Image 1 (cartoon, rainbow, N blue to C red):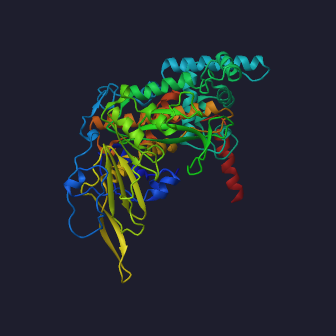
Image 2 (image 1 turned 90 degrees about the vertical axis):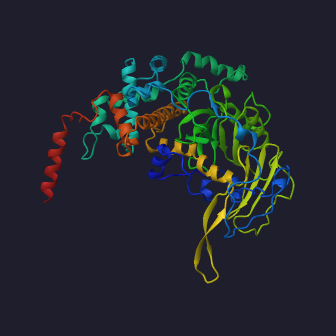
Image 3 (image 1 turned 180 degrees about the vertical axis):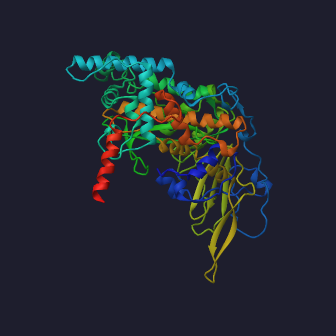
Length: 539
């Protein structure tokens, strides 16, 4: 599944600029699967301009080809019921913390990694070390406390900002090029010992759960080792921020090749091997509102498919409210799902695969293979709109919140008979316009995470997920920090950058003064003197 990418400038604009219509295109890189790439370039059927035809479900508009005449500003069909329903969020959208007081990066991070979570993490880590030492493993250990745990996380974040080839490189001394900060916070051996033993669940309860895998497989919990921290992170994501009206759902891969029943291979993803997450994100800024981890076939499956169950699990009225619009790719889109979401007072829009169950089977809506660019067809069944549009290829969409056409156009280049190129405007369906704007929420979140990700190789899959939870906490904290700055009318040229935010957080976690120069090691002057003498000898 190809992942949409943004430039740094686009990320900044999408994070905190008001919703603006981006350039509408049919670049296959915007599509989220190979199947979608095959059908995605033929999007929306055109809403019939004849009012009588538009009122009859199951009819198709005549194809519209690009012309130089002006396009109508709206169509005769009324929007579906979900479009007319009120947007009633459970809480006021935006940051839910007290924005009247100054929020520091550390304060925002502690909302996700609370004092209770850190104490539990320390207690379970100490228990695991005791068990390992009793089993014969040899290494020095003193019980870790919350202050030291925060310093460990701070160093992990530091390594995400300043990337070296190996962890040991951060503590090298007898090299001409070395870094000074990590050794002032923690010794190398101590950092390694914590990394090898970090544990989120109670080791004694792990043993009980592991036995169930053989004796009581129905009661075995695959995610047991993650649950204590994962539950806290998910609750914090939901309590700290309430999303705006447009949401997107997509998969996220956390890189690992661990031999677990959860490890997935997705050849179209940049990260091909890993643990798959289903992520619900705010389309306006990429905030991770909720997520679920794919563990294989579920015992609680509804029988309607993985795509149906994963969306229903994340789109909960008890958390969101009603009136939200969800954007998804063709892995999720189905008439059954969209009708179920309508029953929950949620609208939805997404690309749809040809031959999807319960989709219209009529040939009246088919586009000829050689249809000119801008040709549009549509069919409405009850509250669902099925559209097709010809760009470079045919694109198919399904929506419960749109009219087929609202007067939007997109610029394309076409070759004239004399060999020169001209720019033309072709009509583009409304579902595609909004899909291109709002579908990128999870991709934006993924890109922000990757800038300063703390992921590194571990021997246990659950430690890989621990580092990903840190990534979620830091990225969500940064998004909230910028949202708070916007509420305070901070000038654009004074907004905190992503790197500055992470550096500030590293300093606070490690207990050093922000912007202070760390104390140099004793042998630093000796190293510099040797370096100078070597240059003098060469001259």
